[in-house]
Image 1: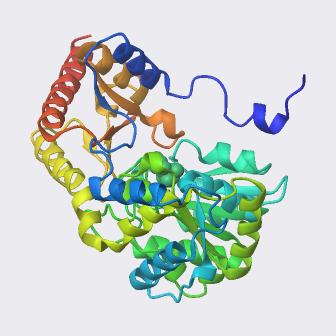
Image 2 (image 1 turned 120 degrees about the vertical axis):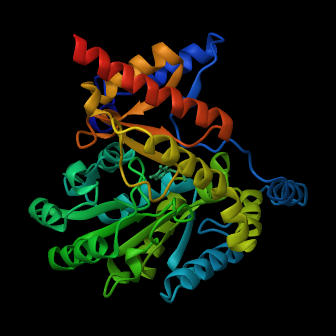
Length: 395
Ligand SMILES: Cc1ncc(COP(=O)(O)O)c(C=O)c1O
């Protein structure tokens, strides 16, 4: 039977730099000890107090259909968090709870793109972005955020690509680069959005992981609240990746339609998960900082180790749970380097090529194993790069 073009063409097809990831997973299932610095998942689990709340809520009977927009008290909590951190008036009417940030990304694009519309996103990008756009029947158009600009996107590049576009998807703090967009970058992008009448979909799932500079939500910039949909999630901020709880914050009219979309797709998020999310958010910044702390420490460890060499270039590591390293001085592509590193040292990193074209010749290192193991892996990675470069010189 024929399947839809939309679903069979969701992903790009062919090798897209993920081979090394699948190879490392295979090695692990074959019993080989691999240091996995690939995907963005904490090495701790959800805090016991959050689990206890979840358990009590489920046992207390919150296991039936939950309110589709999200339970009012969680929507209030998300609204309060956003208003407190951005200064933009936000009420529960601006919030819809979704099963994680990914579902929010899909819903946000469904809300603003008709079939055949063009939606913009930056390359390098989080792996699902183009597929999410294609999933709603729109055309995904990449705008390069270039390595020579330290992966800060340029508003002029957005402008040049914006002719027939309806939306722009951004992500700061950024996965995969670890870059935090500056106020100037965001102001200039916002200006293009206003002039070109674009929706701005702002993926802020790493908003609690900022090591340098500050996280600015573009919804707070002048005249942006009416054209911005902010995607948030409990996954990264509260180590709740498996709980699937996130949200969209946006204009009330958009939220009303998004709630209707939820009714026809997900039918909401389990009540006991929402109770746990509400409890977690009520713990405020202290819990968020506790969860972010190991990434901050490992980033500092990596900076110290990298400072002892001058072969691998560190892209400004300002936020999120990743480092992006420029491996071009080894003479290898990111994909070649990642594959060779896995074979030589059983260390798995993601090639930059798996995040599009702009990060070719780079690798992404996730800060997601314990400090000692992480430091040892970084030392080996640097030594390996030096060996590769030396071999290249003598070849
Ligand atoms: C940039 C970005 N956005 C969204 C997500 C989706 O997160 P979740 O669906 O777990 O909230 C991820 C997950 O890695 C991500 O890196």
